[in-house]
Amino acid sequence: MLRTIVIYWTGTGNTQILAEAITKNLKVNNIDITIKNVGELHQDFFNTDYDIYILGCPAMGIEALEEDEFRPFFEKLKPHLNNKPLALFGSYAWGWGEWMKKWIEECLNVGAILMTEALIVKSTPSAHDLKCCEDFCKNIERMLVTYA
Ligand SMILES: Cc1cc2nc3c(=O)[nH]c(=O)nc-3n(C[C@H](O)[C@H](O)[C@H](O)COP(=O)(O)O)c2cc1C
Image (cartoon, rainbow, N blue to C red; front, top):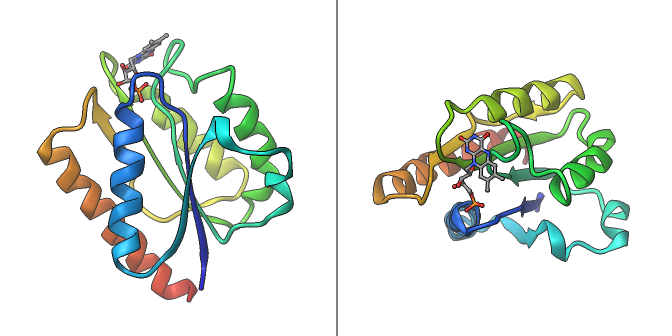
């Protein structure tokens, strides 16, 4: 079974809601999935190669990834992302999703394969946003069939 990991950072819980909804949706279809807050990862995390990465981080700074925990983690992860299926998600509040555009660009530059359009949600996810979460998961599942 393909080993999938959801890793997220959250300040006020919005991105965590998305991370948990994504995990729940994918679990239903028997995907081997682990969810971790980036702060829970141990030093040996990078010794394990996952098949699929699903990463979540809200817009922080000025349209940037959170810089104290998530950015350092992401920098270390980058060399592992070449040719890896990946999906991105996160919450924002007042911008236009610029942070996600930049993040997508960075991922493509290191050779990651984006499995679906990024899921970006304004502030706390609404019922409609959670429905979009289901669609995000369906897109991932469709792609996984080609990797199984
Ligand atoms: C320090 C800080 C910087 C932020 N910068 C941005 C930003 O550049 N653009 C934006 O749209 N939202 C920005 N936000 C809003 C957060 O992205 C938004 O509140 C989001 O829902 C937080 O997600 P979380 O609950 O997972 O932490 C910022 C929030 C904080 C606290």
